[in-house]
Image (tube, rainbow, N blue to C red; front, side, top):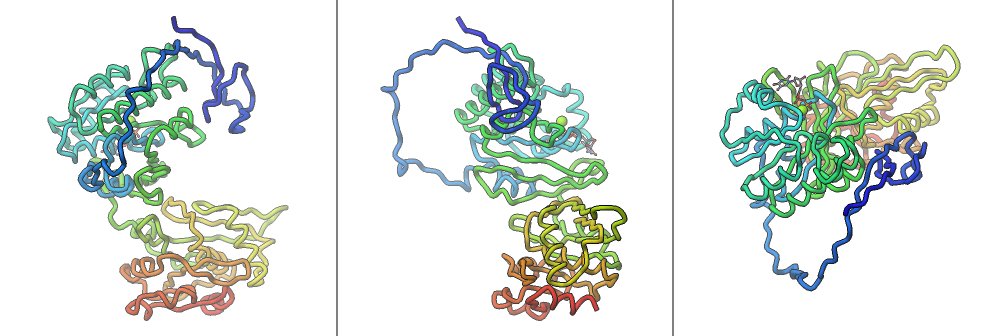
Length: 449
Ligand code: TYD
Ligand code: MG
């Protein structure tokens, strides 16, 4: 007989407690405990005599032949070169961002047997989306089902090449009487699907929702269980969507894929620089172009700054798409090393196009955008500015400088300011476009006179 007990589980990290608690002792989250029923099945004794380890030298595997290439190159790159057999990929994102569209379009590109399990939409609704995307392939099989055990049995006895579960929050495991969407159900359904993926070698995609706080709904354990976590994000007011990898056991987590949501589905954006450069650089002070590296690609972006006198109390510092703490450091450097009296001014910083930049290689562009707006001087000849800024106001080298310069030159920018220390590694044919600079003061004197 299975025993039942009630526990309280933290919906963020999965910590279990017999009592309700206001704050999770594990992850520190407030008000995250929900009551759930857990079933403890009696232990069945297992014999271990049948275990057979395999010598690593005897396992044959060739990565290239094995992966399932989707044919959507932006998606493939984020996956690290297609789906790995038996892998589980979690695709998260806000409702309406385009998760179902992306997986359906992927299914439409592939020429193999695909099972699309939908717990959210009726067959007619999916058909409606498919006809909008002009997809009508007999290789795509739809299944309106929420019982994860029944789905697993079907996967095991059929020979699908890819399985899509839309969404994991609608699935339930019949051994547990918790409602679908509860932590126990999400966790158990994911375990079940993970096991079946490993057993059959079929890659499984789990579509997941995002909570108000921006993390994928369900316990963090879900993210630990799966092999790859992808997040589909984008601004509500813009048609551009970014596919980002947050975790990838089989590839880099730096890669992003960029799409545009059109009337007839998602279109890959092959040249992202064009969208992030808004409508060409505004001929106004406070706007600077730089070249950033997203995974293996260089993308040109525009950094905009607005500096206004602070009227009351503490001046405001607001950064969109850039780290707030990094901005504070750069403001302090500008104040000390370039004698800009920023403490009496509000500073608003924006990276256009809704992209978020983590790397320090755009420091110098940020500093120049701020200084340019403060002094109301527009840098001449559309410069592209690269470099990390040190606390002493010195300009430090950046990684992959040639890739960044090439992207700028390709788009017609021939006036680049680069760190002096990078000069020796810049390709011969690119040096003619580069002005090496050593310090914040040096570049500011050149550009903002
Ligand atoms: P959907 O894939 O249903 O989002 P999710 O599964 O993440 O909730 O996408 C829904 C939105 O996408 C909806 O607002 C309509 C829009 N859309 C288009 O603009 N063009 C299209 O071709 C499709 C299918 C959807
Ligand atoms: Mg959907």
